[in-house]
Length: 262
Image (cartoon, rainbow, N blue to C red; front, top):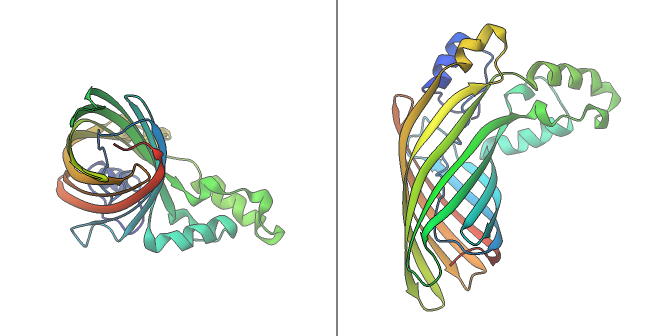
């Protein structure tokens, strides 16, 4: 996803064939949270994550929103390396050389609970989603920058705001167990999945990259601790293949909202 990350799998192939291609679209260092134990409501999330391998990613920050109506759960997140956050904001406000390397990752996930929920302590869901990188150049509004920087803004936006980028599509199932604890409850969950990875938006010279795809098996386990359905604390561990590497992530987070957890 970001310039500090070791590329693997398709990303390595893509970069070898076309050095201008952006980095991977899976947020290195952040687990995929897929607890199937949710209820109708809306929540705001904030998470911190890191890979167990120091060479894969630095600390990662993720923020997002989730909405659930009955058995259907929807979520959207934006993630960025902690060390890149300030620089990304600066690039949007004041474009300069080097801004093409600043990226965030946007992701969306949908879940459908097919069993459990309500009074049942067991839940089962299927899920699918997508994530891809957004460069700082994609966010440029050159009309808002100082006149002295508008030409440079237009140059960076034209050169880096479009082009090939990696798309990651996770598809899997999640099973959860609720353990009642009075004012709160402990929700334990596990979720095996396949990550389907491919490049999109290739130009004619790189079309062969977009014609290929790769599937990697990964799994995640986690725990959520909702308190009075207002505050919830969560943790997860995510492991499996990314290209030819086995990479593990851990993450901690919290959310606040109305409902959305059981």
